[in-house]
Image 1: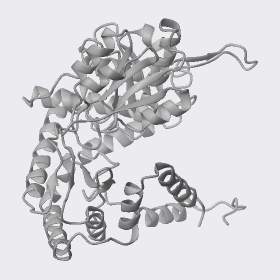
Image 2: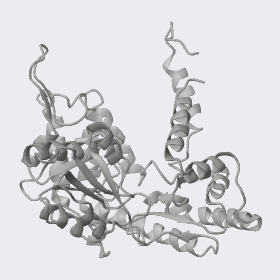
Image 3: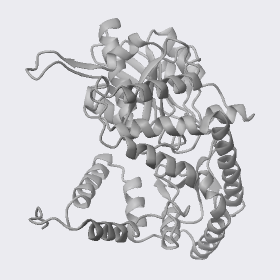
Length: 440
């Protein structure tokens, strides 16, 4: 058991130990990690770190004390709202990530409905099954019941099911641009129209695609409308720390107007310590993340994002074509940006993930159905062919065995994904998490 140190340790020794531990982590800078880190190029990375360090100690809890952070945040929101064609009335805030942005969207919709739709006594929100689990978390926290609707063969939400699910308790409909599992855009225009017809809120979750799709559209890719210009869309979220290439801990939530945004605020006016007012979920908000996000957006500009979007799509196409050419594998659906999954009918896909992990590649696992998942950035351009070569070799080896029962973590993934009792699956994961965060 680790105890609080009696004596401090020299900085040099601490940094040496930290470096040793870092070398055990997934290799994201070398391009062997297909999730969690969005890395574009060295110069941008250095700028983001330096800008973060300049405002390492500043706290956006009180923007009056740090007007620099207020300027950075307001300009990040203004630039992002402009990207999403929000108009002069659009208003929003920066958050710590997509989960917080989605939590705020659900909270604001619930509180808006309390004022505008008092008949919604037991609030519900309509979600495609591919919607991010942050909506489930928000529903759990804020007492908004998720109503799940299926997706079609193209992995997009079924509009007719949305329409049938609306009732007097519905306070929010949500769609993804793009959904994380398959990289496709839900029919936002049609879904938002249903929300508008019924006088309820609609949220576009563009946490993953927000800083990629507008630039792909400018490059001529056939990107369907999803932003604040779509009638009925009342809010949108987009993560700067994903394809905005900003620092971890930087996302945005933007509303059609400030009247909607007011419902996300929390105010407590009766504390002896003063009036407590927070625009987002957090109290203390790291100034470094806000300043660094501003610096990255200003540095890249439209031309920089167009260049990076084109590079990411080019390598993504190379990877998808290469995977589709492997007889045992299949790219799922028709991804609209450099995010996609692939599965197999002939090899155990989780076992394939384990074999690729043994070769140093980190891939996310998916379930229902089982698949492996890739998030592609410009950094992957130099390792696309080595990855495909290892994937071809690993798939060929497993194909000789047939779709056998896997062992180790591959078996655990498969078992959890197929358990009919989802509460049992949840209990297994709860125990796993509890063990994971115990000091060894």
